[in-house]
Each structure stands twice: as structure tokens, then as C-alpha cells.
Length: 403
Image (cartoon, rainbow, N blue to C red; front, side, top):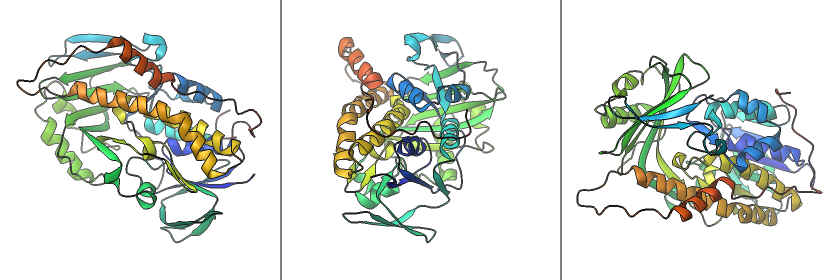
């Protein structure tokens, strides 16, 4: 079926990446985003291993690299700023602690939007309010009042996915909080950062503060993390989030007070609990889930963006290879993605656990099985195959803003 009409909910990274491949496979794509426009800033996200190949196949390698943070390396420091460990972006072939493709979430979102906007209908400031599906299609009512029918609807609307709650059930059924909170926001670069990330970890409390360079050398991106088993702040209540951040990190030491001094004048504050989404299946009839909405691995995995980029290629490819028949297309996508997702989620859980402050009297943690750990890391970086999909339509990269 050519000209299949697909509605994608969410215009951060997963949604526009999926729109790219759906268009190339011959679908007519609409992306709806409840925010009034693209959201700037955010955490730095990485592309490693097979995700770099997915970017290359999109034809966006040059555009993505041009927007990267250009971070040369990283240093971990003690409370007085003394360097404890140092890392380079060249480590492990560019797939190490600092990836050679490292880009702010908002910048990658902009690259993907610019690349697709000529052939994709973007609807900002709206959302899906009602949805009813039958054997032949999906009737959608938008919050703005528009009513339309699509062949497929795919939720790429993040950890707090409204589409997931609407079709699959309440958030509590699928969201697994890992007991850690992250906050990100940009600050003036009054710290002398020059292409190197600096991180301070307070091992006694499981808290950390980090500053990373961004392409605008006059500013830097800050990140705080702290444990919080009782996190109950609404993800849209920004003032409550800022109060919580101050309460939990004001006594952290290092440069934390100077970083916190900018929390009220930053244009791009974001805070949320670290969580994963665990589901037995990512589709229901003609409705599917994708990206964090389906399988959030949490920022602590370092692989969420890779899951979105690789998953976009596979989901569009499998749907097109199945002639846009949803049951077969969604089944193929789940089969190809499941192990890759599970490896990245395991990495995320292990990372959070490694930051936890030990309770008094705890036995020392056993030494890790390094062979098993390295096998897990390899599966999380390269554990998905990208088929050529010979015989499946491919119109070439959509014409956008990048040559």
C-alpha cells in the first residue's frame, strides 16, 4: 500500500527520525507535538556503534557532526577540583565515555526537523485527545478540534507518553523508576570550560554535578543527579522542580553553588526522575509505540538516542516490507529491537546502581564479571542488525535544509 497515512506523536528526536524513514518508504506522514515549537537545549546525547551507521544511512552524518558539542574529553574531579581520572573522545574508537558524536538533544531535534519539514506535516501546539481504531484505520480527534483518519498511529511522545496511557494503560503499569533524579540547564561559561567536560561525584551521598562544553563557547550545560526514592513532583511543575533541586544539592560543594545561582535565569531547565519503560509488546492493532514511549532505557544508559535512531530505521523498514500490514510490520520491528533494547536497559540499571551510596554495614560489592560486562556493552552498542531491505521502496533522503 503506497501513500499510507501515518500519524506520529512527538517531535523531539524519535518522532522526526521515524518520519524521515517513513517518508523514504513511501508513507504520508504527520507529526503532532503538544509543545508550541522545537524545544532547545537539553542533555547531551550520544550516537555509538550501529547508531552512527543509522545516521550515515539517513545522509545526515555531516549535518549531525556540524552540530556536535565538540567535546574533546572529560575529567572527573574531587571537591577541590583535583583531577582524578581523564578520558578522551578518541577512546574505544569514539564509542567510549565521551562519544565522538555527542550533540545536545535540542540540536539533534533541529537537524532532524530541518531535514524532514519539506515532506512531513508538522503540527505544533496540539495533541491527540481521542483515538478509535478499527480493522481499516484509526480515527483521531485532536485537542484543537480537528478530526482525521490515519492508517497507522505511532507514539514517540516520550517517557510520559499520553498515547501510551490512552491505548495501553496507566503509566504505573509500565514506568520503572530507578531512584535517581537528573536536572539539566545551560549556564554562562564563567568556569573556563574549553572542550572538556568536568564531573564531580560525591560518593558518600550518590550525588553528582557536571559541566560540559557546548558549541556556543560563552555557555555551558550543567547537570545534577541525586537519589530520590520518594520523587513526586509533577513533570510540568518547573518551579517545584527547581525547589527540589536546590534542597537536594545546595550543600554539594565544588562549583555547585555557582551553578545553582543560574537556575532561575536559564532558558532551558529540565528535571525528571530517571526511569525506564518496560512493556511486553509495543503495539496494539494499528497503534504502535516507539522510542522512550515504548522502551526508555533512561539517560543513564547512554543509549536512548541510539535506540531511537536504529529503531526508526527498523520500524519503517519492517512496516514497508510487510506492505504496511500492521501486525506483521510491528512484529518484525519488535523481533529485531527487543534484545538491543534489553541490553541498553540493563546498562542503565547498572549505571544507576553504581552511583548508589552504600548503606552502613553493607557487604562490599562482588567484583564484576568483566567478560560478561564487555559482552553486554557490545550488545548495547552494536546489538542490532540494519537490513538493506532490498526491494522495499526508498525515495532517498528527504529534501530539507541540508545539502
